[in-house]
Image 1 (cartoon, rainbow, N blue to C red):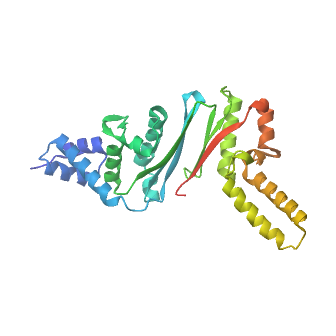
Image 2 (image 1 turned 90 degrees about the vertical axis):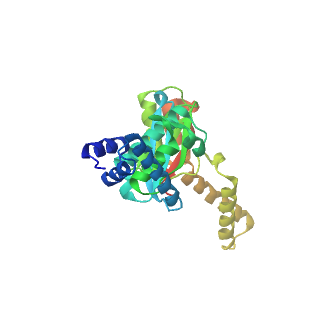
Image 3 (image 1 turned 135 degrees about the vertical axis):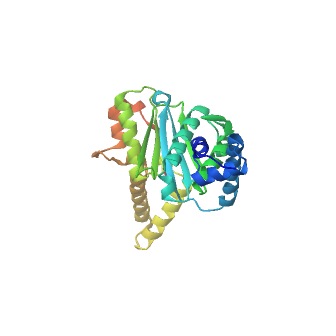
Length: 283
């Protein structure tokens, strides 16, 4: 049967699929619009299955602060190429998905994929993801997300056009312009300096043990007495903590003070960084 250009356009508007894909779907379904939508959806599922093992090293990291500044989401969605990562369809999907995480609060990726897709509840998130895969022809996966809520003011920062993202939470339940700016500045610092933890007490003991062993081996090569070696190791560990613990780092906008001093000036002894999460695309 002859398929009109107007009918193809209607299907394209519904699905965002290519002209030839829509025309073929309408021919296969004898011009039935709803069956053509289902046909294209099934094609997306098939493409998703074929592409599932392909590497996804590109994509985007997005962040959203919600709940009047008291909650936030950091999300990484991956695809195969930088070209697809920059398309409106991919970027919009990531932003809408972050908004869904903010409101629906799934515990993990599998639970998120099983949820109804909020803009179109007749589909699950996985169903809609399959449609995007069918449209782009690339493997796309929701890699990871973090959601902060209920412990204080949240700040976020995205760097390098979505290749690095940070979510950071302060202990203050007050949302003021000054504290909002502070949270964003500290998230920017985490993006730039990549600290391991907020404080030295938060550093993984296994990391400390590894660093200690390295410093001990280096110090013993000097041939100095054991007491001197101990002091050398302590000094090098102290330097390590100052470099990789957020509150001990110099503040990026004013290196004359540390982040700990900045927090004290901004809110006294009670103001602290509760936690942060940093995503770097593909790592």
